[in-house]
Image (cartoon, rainbow, N blue to C red; front, side, top):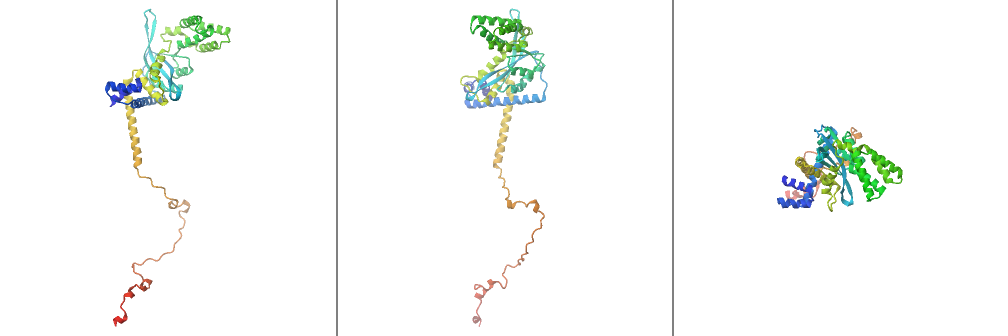
Length: 396
C-alpha cells in the first residue's frame, strides 16, 4: 500500500525504527517489524541520495540556468560528528541556505531574521561535499540573488567552499568563533575563570562588535610583544589577523547581515544529531547518507514535493530487479552449451589445406547377390546340401 509505505518511511526519518513501527501500529493498526521499518526507510533514503547525486552530476555537466533567487540570501556550512560501527566517528557536513529579512526591534534598532532555511547534509569529504551541494545551491537560485553572505567559521575547507559556489559573497567570520579566540587569549593572560579575565574578555568583545577589529588587533600585537612566551596568544593573534576583513562587524550589521552562523549550528542539531546521535546508536557508514537525505527533506518542509520522486525511483529500481531476476532464471533454464570439439575433430591446419590427398587402393565392388559363390567353402561343409542329398543306392 503506497500510503502505508510513505507513512512508515516518514516515521522512520523522524524517530528510531522500533518506535516508528510501534507508532504505526498504535495509530493506523498496521503491524510492521522494526527490521522492515529499517529496510524500507534506508532504501527510500538511498533512492533519494541517488537522485540528488545524478542531479548534481548533470548540473556540473550541463550548467542549466538557475531559478530566480531571493533578494538577500545567506549560506553557512559546518560539520557534526556521527557515531559509526566499531567505535568509529564520521563528520557529517551540513549546508544551510536562508533568506534574510531585516525588521525593527522595539528599541528602534535593526533586527535581522533568517527564514525559509533549507538543509543539505552528507557524510563525505570536503571536495565531494562541494560538488553534491550544487543541487541545493542551484535549486535556491543563489547565483541570481542580488546579495549573498557566507557566515562561516574560519576552517580552510569552508573558504574553498565559498570560492567554488559564490566567490562574490560577503564573507563573515562567525562572531561566536571570533569570541572563542579572544576568550583563549584572555584566559592565557589573566587566568582561566578569574573575574579579571571575564571582564577583559567582555570589554574586548563589545569593542570588536561595535568598533571593528583594528583597535583590538593593535592591542593584541602589543600584548604579544610583552608576552612572547605565550604561544596561545601568538597563535590566536595570527588566526585573527588572517581574517581581519571578515570581522568588520559594525559594517556587516549596518548592511543587515547576520554575524553568527546559528542557522547551521541549529541545523546540525536538528538534522543530524536529533536522529543519528541518540543514546546507543551506531550506524553503518553506508546507511548514514540515506538517513541524512530524508532528514534534509523533513526538516526543510519539502516532503510533499520530494516523496513522489522517491516513490518513482523505488518503482524503477523494483522493475530493474525483477528484470535481472527473470534474466537469471532464463539463463539457468537454457540448454548447456556443447563442449568444443576435440583436437582430432578440429579442422585441419591452414598449411595442410590444398595438399594432395594420398590415393587409397580401390576395393572390389560387392555384387548385387548375397549368395556365396560356387567355390565358397561353405558349399562343401558337412552340413550343407550334400549331406541331405539322396544316395545313389536309393535312386537305384
